[in-house]
Length: 106
Image 1 (tube, one colour):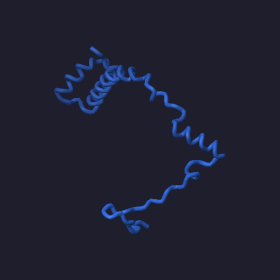
Image 2 (cartoon, one colour):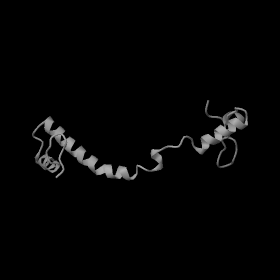
Image 3 (cartoon, one colour):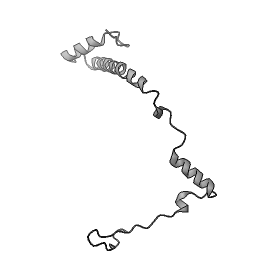
Image 4 (spheres, one colour):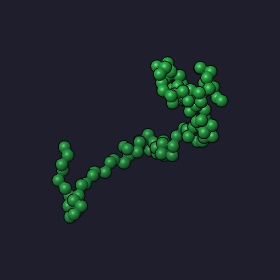
């Protein structure tokens, strides 16, 4: 049976006695929590090792969007995209008749 590292008691024994009640007070609850957490960690570690080689554990230095932004700045002499192409004005229209709606926001 697996042992709890701190108390050197089998985890199953701790879980079995926890079902009878926690009359031991705070120290007993802490001991039970430690045993349950250790058992959980033993169960999760193999799954973490399986995905350790996935790409999101080694992030890339840049994305294609940031690379495009950098290339654009170099090609235009340092002018970023948001300055080269100003934002278009938003026009709100009534969906029923297509007419421009009066401004309602300050």
